[in-house]
Picture 1 (cartoon, one colour):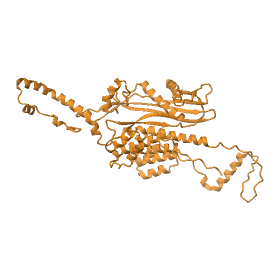
Picture 2 (cartoon, one colour):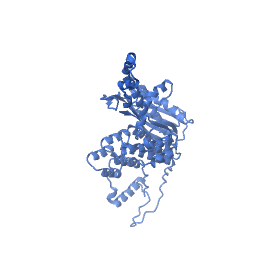
Picture 3 (cartoon, one colour):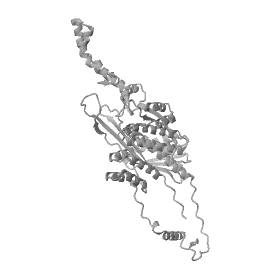
Picture 4 (tube, one colour):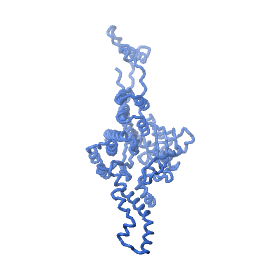
Length: 505
């Protein structure tokens, strides 16, 4: 049996062989040696434990993974405001559909103005005559009791029982709207989720590394901030976490935001050299080294390389000053994150960036829509109708002169004439319902081949896919993954860009 680079068999020396080396020490010496030999198992156990702690990172580094000694880097997550407005004064109004959540509404109303003013010093609160009115309605708040579960884990103990954990979940949903004096400039449904596993008994986070479990208590005693969650949140702490996340999402839509986030990197074998570049902030060289690297033959191992590539694109996106370039980089990050998750759905760390990247992409989509609406010319005022001579008979030309029936009847007549000329092509049936996750799963379970499903996704008139982390897990559990999920992502991106309707002739 061996741990790391040291063979434990070398530590097992029989008492007879030891006496043969040192000679007979006499009755007193033999008695003392007998007492010390009884302590040898405890000493040996201590040595083995120390070697496990010291050499475990070495053994885990032999393959691509996140390992017990997780590599973390920080990046500046800079996002421009998703909407544009000129107001400098604002007011916040928060209500709740359920009176039981009025305290959540009050806390949100207290925190949101502070966050907006922290990011934009020119904004000030004016509850009497605000130029910008921000309204939020608490539509859902759930913090269910922890859910216990158990799972088998590799331990040094033979036939060890499953380790017990419990999951803490929470969800806060808010209907948000921002309105100036003339119009609604932004609105959305904001959702904040929390889901974390904790060990039963210790209450430590399940994804906490061995090294942090040993080191973090000393950091906490020294008053230093630790990187990982120490214990499960109390109900009040969970409520605060969810409210803070909603506040951050709303603020990011209205003002420029700049936050430091911590991201976990996969490491091991060829990945260690690029990780060092990321740790020094050399993201371009980091990306180049990963993309020019030979992919690993095993897709489940290459998934870690793809994940790290996604991190690089995300970091480059936040550095970009060009909005279009930033969105393109975020799209590349999402594609690589998605490929990693498709290759190894069971890797929990592949789930972490999904919500973060989807939020950022949706942020830039909203910004594009806002800029397009701001730059669009105002609709031209309809000019009064001018009398015109009637059209000549037999020429097929419609008269431009409105009759006493009104402009609406004239327009209706023109439309009717055009419809009759175009034949049955214009008498279309109502649009088919949007293609959803459930329909894709139904096709997969019915035995429809992958290429046919992908074709149906591409040809669908409209789609309404749910590509959140939870939904991706459900898709994978129902046999929908790989190329089909990639096609769903690409089709979902296309559906978000609606072309302007052509002008009527």
